[in-house]
Length: 465
Length: 98
Image (cartoon, rainbow over all chains, first blue to last red):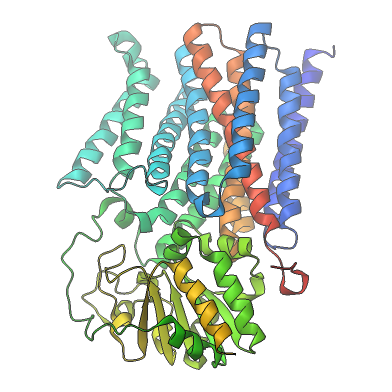
């Protein structure tokens, strides 16, 4: 057995290598060509750090056994569920894994605080802050998971909610101070438990009022928070790999949160604390009646177009229509039609959600464009085919100052010569706002489930020759 | 081990590195990026292992056990779904049949 200092050095070196592999791996993710190798590099780093820790952490045989059992159970469950989960369910899966990371960070903090071995005030503060953030991320992510999974279908909102949440926040911070200052220990209150209980309640209370379309922002935010919590616990444990990895993830999540909020033209505070969609909607934008179209007519129109831009939204994910859409696309391309996909940053329930679904179906990513790349092209498109998207193509965002989504960057589908909207029914989008696009002269509505409607379009295009 | 100020330096440099590296990731890869960074914070596993290794009461053992379990799930699940998603991104020239 090597000496204690050698072990220490070996462990730290393995953490250094792991941290380097994480950063290089994330860097390789900046291109789809190298991205798979990127995650594998990061995986090697993770494996190395785990094995070295297991070998050298010097646990009693009971604790060592517990560690191995816990890893085995966690690995098997996550491996099986990760392999099986459908691509359409990816947002809730990511929310769940994210919550697990936050929970683990909170558990580390709890171990440090309950065992009472820690007396360094800086470490105590770090442990409490990391535990607080981790617990919020844990319970908040679980609520986000339940919402995305459809276990919770209503957004719980009441007047004065933000003041209740603020009160919970202040109480939690108060218990945090008592834990760190040692006042709590003297008072005989179980302050550590109270800190965690209130942090968990805060996560639930914060996430319950948030609606489905805001989930991209929320998932990104909790990703950032879990990263930060891991970073803080890294300080407590003198573990540089945790500090680096946690902080990198924290800034990555922050960046994504900003991008998502910007794509909705809203601030993070607005997403978290406003009762969006509850405000009475000023009308005026939804002039014109919705004109239905038969799939056969729509198919003919598309078959004889030169250029079609497809705009997918959450409705495509719900109906699992991505494979049919790619079938339709290939058919149209065989007819000589130029087909492109236009993806809004907040389409779906997490950043890049639509890209993943289209990739799953086999759509090459060079057919897919984001907002800035494609917006100028709608004017030259014969047909804009909207599949289960709503607010992201509502021209009211450009023109109607009274609209709640005024100012949000949208895809300019209304500039296309013809617009075909595949929509489940005549209802409104998530935000409850009338969509001015649906009433335009060049717009036709194709009602029905996205998968069924696209299947009908495929038949119609085939019949058209 | 890690001095307070040194730790702050690590924190600062890692924050800038993260921001720079991630800001170059294209929009189409945002979901795998998120699950990939999700996987990276699975490094919390080593911390949870060390915490459980030092546990000496039943309460702390239970919490530590749950921590390791959750962290292992985070790391393994994050890896599996990220790799699955990234494998699906193909260029038009390289695509396999539908």
